[in-house]
Length: 120
Length: 118
Image (cartoon, rainbow over all chains, first blue to last red; front, top):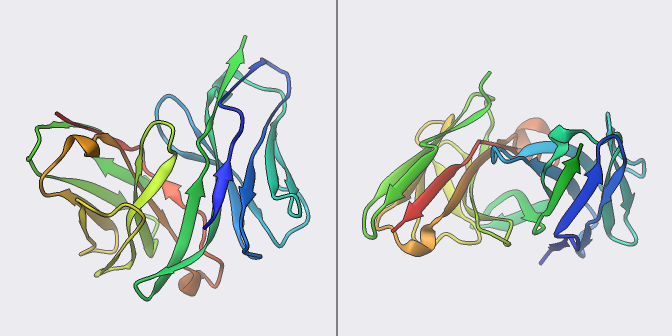
């Protein structure tokens, strides 16, 4: 079974500064995806960034980038030039192909989340 | 293009009552999922569907039933609500590996339904 661990329950950062959120995972799979989702107070789960395990190049999306260390099973999220709108709960998630009842699907395993607060 | 929508946004039930949560997506996705989110536990999969007319159990299926009569809709039912089912429920959808030729694709989530069972 896969596990995802986010060791920082809460983080805070000043506006315009950079912050890094940590995530580690445990799996015996070789082919999988990793995601960061953002959940603001509105409760909507919003995809921030996605990384395919077979790609060595770290994914980037504007101010968001990841540091993917496959051997170490680490997947951290860096937010540059933090903005007030980045205040949210951030979830790290691992996806692999699972089979149940004769059908396969993309199984998402979530970490417990990190609450990020951006201060003005 | 509304993405994934959920109805209702909030609901309060008494123990033993029944209700149905509706999820709709307009992205022509094959796969749909129901999750519950409890404090400190992240999201856990209740049931999922790989296409119209098919459903399967996830990690925590007990006390819930689902139906996928139309490709765009996925319904989650509680036949006899219990206080342990107080939670926030999320629906998600994605392309399937077979139709897109890709690994299970990114799941896109609805806005959630906050359910309280008294």
